[in-house]
Image (tube, rainbow, N blue to C red; front, side):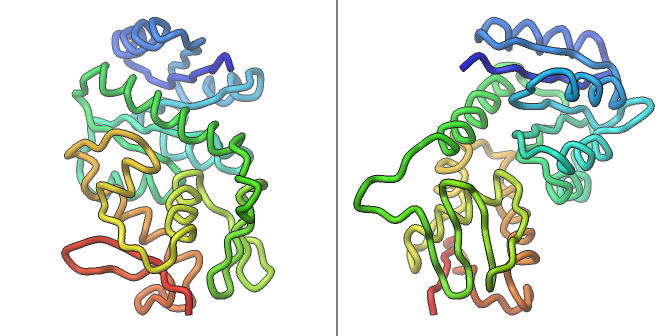
Length: 233
């Protein structure tokens, strides 16, 4: 598959550097200097993954992420000079799959792009083994791994790609405890120290969507000092 990458970045030097590295990987890269230009490219091209800067003129990366999520579930990687936890949490809550603070190593960006593309598109095309059901069920939750649709008591629950991958991992083996590192490596590839809080944010977002009481979760349990598991009861 010839993947198309969108870079929305108003600093031309950064955009050109990322374009160079990603084109060296064989990707077709489109650049936009602001969120409005990025939306026009998204309407025109079949974009596979978006790399978005936060601080852009005309439309910032947060609003662009929200607009993308209205119509698409492509992987989104946010870049920002703002590395505070609240900024990261906001980006992930709006539907981003990954977040990197500036300054960054271009090779790490390439690694993250590769991982997100591999995990997302292999997951979408991978066929379940004949002896395995493609419907995962835990309590009132039903996850269709072919259509990528989650339902709770028959009602569809919208998930971001990262939320889907985490939930599918947990639902395949109810009761199994996964560390944050295991979850990240299983859903996004290589784990970096800067990813420490990312999984916690995605877990929190999942609880808000699937739990009757997110503060007292029935499904996704925290095993203090170890990780997370999903309970089937």
